[in-house]
Amino acid sequence: MSSKLGKGAKLSAKRREEFLKMTAGRNITQLDTERAAAHLVESTGSTSIPPPTTSDEQVTLNTIKDMLLELTEKVNRMERKISEMDKRMIEGLNLSNETKYIKIQLKEAAEEYLIENESDFYESMEDIQWNVFYEDKLAKP
Image (tube, rainbow, N blue to C red; front, side, top):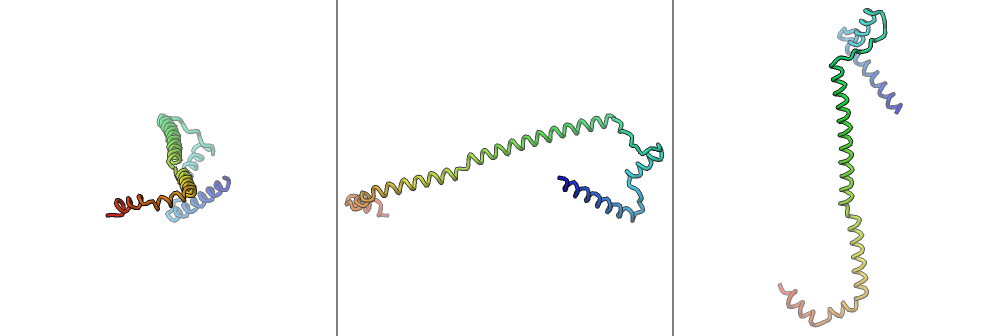
């Protein structure tokens, strides 16, 4: 995490340098915040910044900020619940493994039945009644 902060600090310092270079060509010597800080030192003779006063606007802004944070938390909770429901639905609908297992079971059962009844199967194919039925009903278009 400290490496991310280090990168962020480097990027912001680099951006500030680039901004100062851009503003230097336009004869802007100080940024607004720097100008305000210099004015504060000149007017009060102190480098300490006075605490901000709480006005009705600030109270309203803080209230709105708190409400937005609450809404963000609620939205995040709802998104987590929806994603959990999606996962459960996907798991419930994912029958591919179960279907494969059932197909394997059916295949094994059919193979066992054919192996056990192979002689009966061929004997029934030689049965004249079956051949007549096949020729009369199934072979004709």
